[in-house]
Length: 394
Image (tube, rainbow, N blue to C red; front, side, top):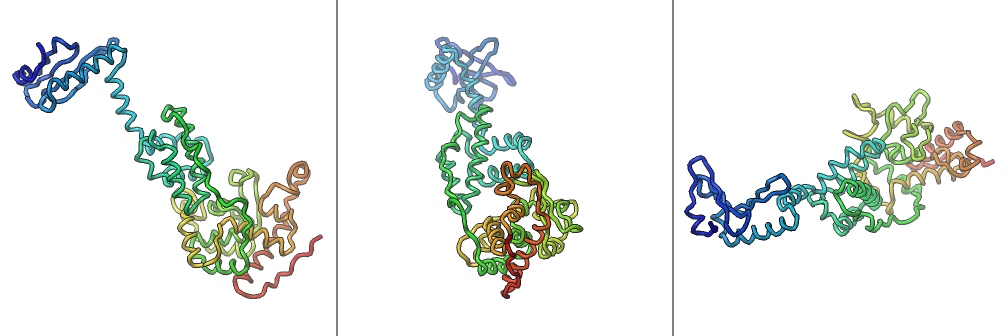
């Protein structure tokens, strides 16, 4: 029979049964009718190899036979060309669920085994937090324009964080290409954010006092005090562990996996540093000195914004404290190679051939250097004249 509106309308199925009637003119085009009249549907059925496929074209009450026939005719033509319309539809439906956020959740467990734990915490923040507005989008919709817009928004307050996020995203898309989830890496050709070029910002004594006195109590305040007093890197202090703090010897010892140059680094604690750390309460079952939950201290941006409002000095970055410490020690007469040893720099006296033969870590000199620097900072913060006399250079 030819499927027409009249022929379809009179079809009835026995109770609890279903019947199918096929069109005489178009192979595979039919109608399926159950005892419930509203469940009658136009269908298209075909075979791929040994598998039989069936596709619903719509309820008979919603579309007319001519529209259903046209759909079936288009599908029949695709089958003749060797295509599998039902398989394509299922694949498209599966791909539609491949959102950017879901792909990230698949990527992160793989990435965990590739990097150090501390690095993994940063990558999670970059992809899960910094790029959260992109999560609902299908991965194919996360194009260069969408990425650039999100990075620009992040760069308005945190340009360095924007560039780190861009790097993590680029690595993610390289993985996604290998997994067949993406055809290209749209992050690769986005512009890198200008971080202001080489930095030479050093806080003046007046600014040191303003920042110190504006620091809040708690993790952020203690971390910045330690950064200024020791000249170490942000993450080295923010992710400090109690087993790295040796009160009995007044030293902090960082293992190779926690330093930028992957070398063990030991530096002394001046009295002010020891007092700050001893005043802290060690949390039960937590090895880290600062922060809560997974990883060390986080929330830098908001804390820095509040500090800037209170201190009211010219724009500066937290990393400037490291430079301020180094410059301050130099003004107090500390030798360059001792400053490099304090900062754990591999350059100058410790670079190249010189570093192979010179294994002196200048422990005694570092004790003196950080002690006189701490005394100088204490005087600056108190607003009194520093009693520290510059060391005589050899």
